[in-house]
Image (cartoon, rainbow, N blue to C red; front, side, top):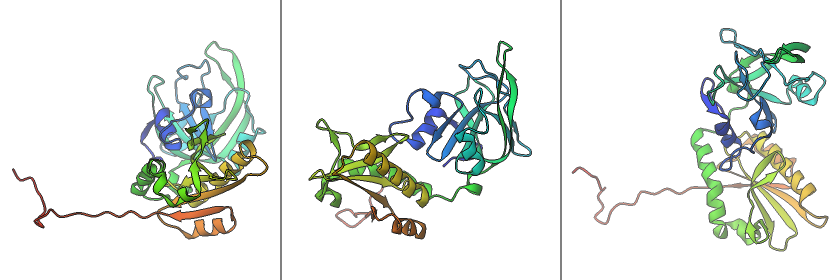
Length: 295
């Protein structure tokens, strides 16, 4: 997902999680850290205060030992859900750092492996006033050391475009026999439909309006991530959009199946799987020769 040592702006990170639309404006995305599904994206300043913050955190990174000392926002403590989930491994922190607050680019340090924490750590605002927060120490690992390996980049790039292709060519797909792209007031809004903490790839509805279909392309994610996210989106639609007489189903689309996905879907009967194929041909010219431009 991210390459250790590479540089990313908040906007670029947002594009990875919300392809084509970018991250939501303002809110936590403009602050030190933001939660996206089971990931905590930490944008920290080291040695300098934030661009629009009166708080000066004593964040540190030891490159030799690959350790991070990180501070939460004011008045945060270990009893809060976010930190409890970090300690248990339920929430995975990804660290991005910069040493110049005027630079929009952050260096990706890796995934934080929790070591220890201390509540009530005292820091000072720019005006000298003290405040308390939690200090957490991590060992920083490359993402591949902790997270399951995802599909190769070429497949990831292909499936990002597949979403656009499906929407534009919906009428010729097998799904179109039963479903239409979801509309509101006559406008197709099913692509990247907002669902609380994220945007589902495609939301469709059956022609008789009795069933919603949440469609997710694997797009480089692990099988567990894809199934979990599909289930979350299905739950959101069931709770916030569907009425008592409407069912909610899911559909995962990928280049190939794998055992992890197969096992997960056996326990999720409301989610189906579809595999796509791509045919690529080179067509010779009329005289059978390969055309070339040799001047």
